[in-house]
Image (tube, rainbow over all chains, first blue to last red):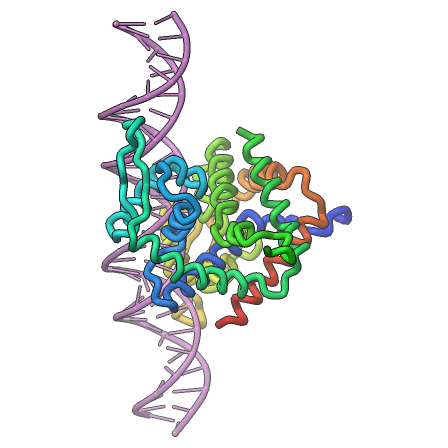
Length: 150
Length: 150
DNA sequence: ATTTTGTAGTTGCATAAACAACTATAATTA
DNA sequence: TAATTATAGTTGTTTATGCAACTACAAAAT
């Protein structure tokens, strides 16, 4: 009888399954679509990095979004194909692609972010600052635990 | 100046990006591999349902794991191909596939769950019961918010 | 009893992920 | 300086996701 634990093993496993994230991801994608935004959630995460700081390498984007390089390469392929960004060779280091937003890519921010913010508001409705802070702390600890294990 | 909010908009967005889940998912997959378990994390979530209750329909599995039917169909295809489960026609309702574990599928539980539990322990190292409870509550609220929006 | 509506499962298509193996270039070091 | 090692990015392969459209069967309505 696991009386010491108020959170059951099953509950704990729910943290690993990623079910909540699948739901959030689907919901966000649906909100994008409902607002005539033909971006995937994944592409959006790339653009968020660039809206914060335009002109960074693919590796930087990979690091910021937590993806590996191949996944990043292909997301950037699609974003470039759709005309939101372009690859520019770095002047000093010829290994680097510097990713810069096109006008189309820059203009998208004002259209998407209100939708993203509204969606975020819907998702977090009824949650307190304290609860969100705890989630942030928990996520940070999990990151540390993963890093510590490498 | 967003002084009312101790959690920044950027922090809030981190909840939506799913970055933490990507890391957790990758880490779990690596732990499986390191322990000679040739299952994907996704296949594992299906088997967890069956180990809890053997002989349920594909739709039940889809509901329990939060996937749509096509994704579930294909995961079950692969699990069946690898000999962990089999599809059985339901006696009363000919629309249903009842999914049952094979002996190979049953035997896997004892091999995998220690790895999953150990991984879970690693990930949650240093977290308190109270923190985990809050995360559970937050996830529950987010589920409700999504449902309420349909 | 027949029609209508709902449910279970599958298939097609586009997008994305992880891992391994690869090329090109830069930085280190011998 | 030449050889080694590290870094940036790409490509190939397998697996998984979401959505739409479809088939088969069951339940409800007329």
